[in-house]
Image 1 (cartoon, rainbow, N blue to C red):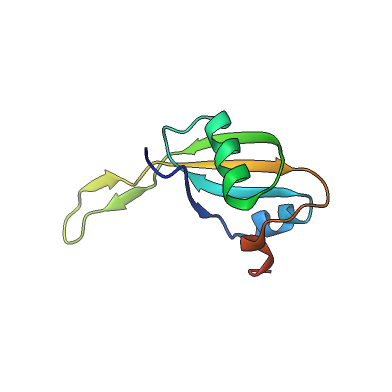
Image 2: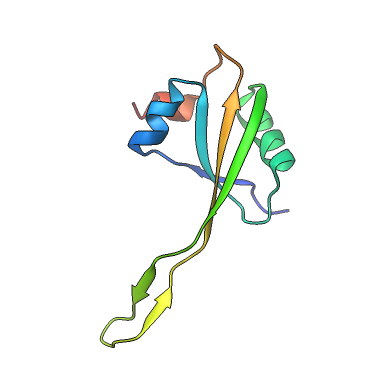
Length: 95
């Protein structure tokens, strides 16, 4: 079974949302919302209220030395809302 949660997304927006108990992760493309919720619960020991996912298309990337382009990698991000008062440590150390 592939790893569901690949890494936390540490952008300005995600760090701002962390104060509202919403955390953003890059996840496996084949993972569904239930699997993401279970992975977050198991990894960080928090109660998950909701999961929102989105698939991001890759930007066009120039192939070096040519005029050719190829699509960049496709990624999937998930925003997880947890119960009020609980925290995820990966986002606390970044802010």
